[in-house]
Image (cartoon, rainbow, N blue to C red):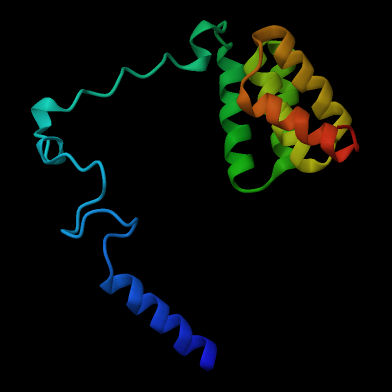
Length: 149
């Protein structure tokens, strides 16, 4: 109880004193520039254009592989990971060198605990496409789980 009262006294003393950092007492922070405080929308630079999607330089998937990948995503969303793995395996038979299929299969395998197979498909993804952030993250997690530094 005494500590709480001491804390309230300290906070009350800070609020009544000069600015937060010992600066001006008119409520403004040091370095405050009133001419830049209020910008109109016309003076704010627009956001830079978004980078192209990662899949833009990849080969097209066959129609049957695209359907299977859609099914696998629906299975994955419903936490039916084994069925997602089976669908992606079938799609890989049709398009064996497609990096997106290898990446999606690796994620599903990682979730199901099939780490060695996931590692193989992650490496294949990097070999084919250079990999994305998720690919490198999962490889790092697998290495960490194995005790590698």
